[in-house]
Structure formats: structure tokens, C-alpha cells
Image 1: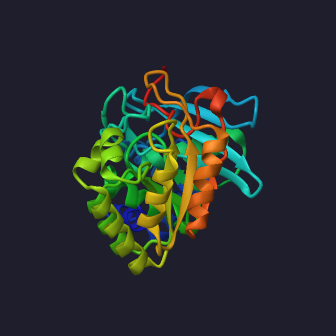
Image 2 (image 1 turned 135 degrees about the vertical axis):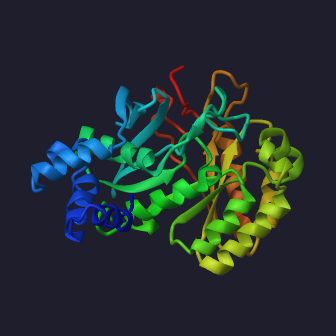
Length: 334
């Protein structure tokens, strides 16, 4: 429940609005798992809450820590037994968490592990929040940045994701600013137009991964519904309405999309846009045959983009030894 929904629900039993504020604070500032922990609330109200409400949390099924960079990957078990993965990364500015938005994924990108075991269901706002709250308590840290790049397609779970975004940025809760949140989509154009109308100040990341329809349709089935021209047009509209720079994610796959010709085609397609290209050496997934581009190929690619005036960087790989890097997260253990 949002704070307003909680106030309305509490009012129905004759409780004053400030009680809802206390409950909300316990949930979203102190991240409690039970009503008994809400010590400034009367025993009678706590008993009522226990009988009529529940707090959705996730439990840590497994925890892996990278020996290289300290990245932490969690395998979380949800209330119905389903499993998802989340990753906490440490940067100079603080801690970032990569959260999942669905149990599995139906998008079928063939360089990604998230959809291999199939799609099960959407996550509720509480289940997305609980990944952050559980990780914070376990690590005894304050998470300041969020990337919605874990298991699932956020815009395929639109309503729950929007509610989560509004709750995590609520000043009465964790108060994580929208500018510290990135949402990644494989190109669900209908969702991009809906998100545009929200006018949220988050960073929209587009998993592009190809400069043309021929390559993209082979690697990303979503391109068969919304091709590159349709996607880029939606991005241009999004930029115009929100005045926010878009980040284009581009997995560098050896021999597939990493040629100089691909770089030139990509640069021409993005020319004049308020955007940034994030090159990601594709990470290994045992069920897939793809390998990452070598260093020389990546440098040549980025040099061509910059020559055409496209701002580009190479993403730092974190947690590769624990399969916690981009494209490696799953809905269960493998």
C-alpha cells in the first residue's frame, strides 16, 4: 500500500491518520518484517494488523560474494517458493542494487539467461521493494541507487513497477531520488509511451544491441513486434517530452554486431539524439554460444562512435566470477 492507501484503510477501523504514517515508517524506513517490531503502536492495533494484513518479504536462499570486486549476488525465495536473483554492487558513490521485476522473462533475448527457464509471473511492488530492504539489512548498508536490469522486463509489468518507483522515491520511505534510478527495457514501445506520460526523472536504458533489424530480429524477438525505426522514434519522443538523456545498451558480441560497419550504422541511426551508448562485452551464458568481442574490436567500435559525435563508454564488468553480470541473472539456480 502507498501511504495514502494505508491512511484510507486505517481510517476504516477508526484509527487516526498519523498511525498510518507510523506503520509506513516502520515498513519503509526501518524495513521491519513483522508487526510485532512496530513498538510505538498499541498491542491491540498490532494484533489487528497481524490478523488482517501481511508483509510480503523475501528470504535469502543463497548468497555469493565476488572475490574480485566484492559484488554480492542474492538468490531470493519469495512467499510462494519462486526464486529470483538480485545483485548489490559497490561504487565510489555508494551502493547500487540491480533488482528483478518478474519471475522469469517472456522476451526471449537469446544472449540472456533470464528467460531460459521461462516466465512464471510478475512481481508485486512489495516483492521488488523487499529485494532492496532485505539486502540492506543483510549488508548493513544504505543503498542509494537502483537499476531495474535484473530478471524480467520492467515495462511488461508496468503498473507494479510504476507503483514500486513511486514508493521507493517517497520522502516518507527510502526517499531514493528518481535520478538515482535506471529502468532498462528491451524495447517495449507501448510501455515507453506510457512511461513518457509519467514524466519521471529516472534514466531510461534501451537494450538495443544491434544497428539494424536483420541482426536485432535474430537476437531479440521483441524486434519482430517493434522494429528499430519504431523504437528509435519512440525514444525521440520520450526525450522531447521528458528532456532526459537515454542510455542505449549495446552488448558487444564477437562476429555478430561488433564490426566497424555496425558502428557506423549505429552512429548514423543515433546522430542528433540526446543519448549515450553503453558498450557491454557480452557475458557468457552456458546455454548460449556467444562470446564477447576482444579489446581491439571494442576500442575500434567506440572510436567510430565518438568520431560521429556519439558519447560512448564501456561498462565495467562486476561479479563475473559469480554469474552476476549483465545477462547472467536467472529466476532460479543453475
